[in-house]
Length: 310
Ligand code: R2B
Ligand code: URA
Image (cartoon, rainbow, N blue to C red; front, side, top):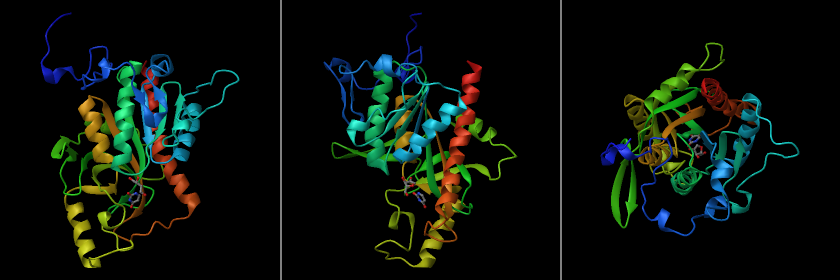
């Protein structure tokens, strides 16, 4: 059908593949996804990744490798005979990537610059591979605000350090803001998959995204601290008054770039501590490992549900 569409409506082609908002890419002989150790000519990206429906990202290579094994079991995926799960981006020495059928599991490192580089290359990967309607989900950790360690938090809105619902870029020396919007329906669908039998809470709320873990998150225990405990508590209370339930370091860039690309996205984090009670992350390793499985369990329920509908 050849009806004409306005600019705003063509973020995505009608077959669900990604429309790149950069005319330069298709004019290039090849596109090297440098930090993924992949390229559009060196690899058959459509053959390798064309069936991807879910892109799950988290900070560390180990957590994403664990998630890959976990989701393989959850969706009953069998690797081709004689093959083992392998890190597709191993030779980038930057990020790790594992593919389990329709699920791609990728590590993103810490903070905005690391996630930003990865998002550009992942969005281009979806484009080159002609993936249809891929969904991006960040599986992470965070500090809770008035929320106990072990609580699972689904982000409803991502806010920057000045509580703006956007991500600030500096492009050619100019400040540019892009909305940090996540898919509200996806967030509700994820929340609905929390079970009353789960021995922990799963909540939806606003997420503050900062550029630092210490001073940037109002911690008193960094190498520097020029504010008082009272200042800190006043700030955290202000966050709480604005509906902020957790703090992490990637949600605004993740939301802004997926939204700009027309990709449905969600952020699901587990709180490692309640910041109203302190700053140090000091729960036992075994406890925190169990906590970090919780967002994975929720996301696995979602992926199973979607795959069952197909
Ligand atoms: C959560 O945990 C990391 C800092 O410890 C950071 O990547 C984040 O968002
Ligand atoms: N990640 C963060 O960014 N902050 C915390 O307090 C815990 C994990």
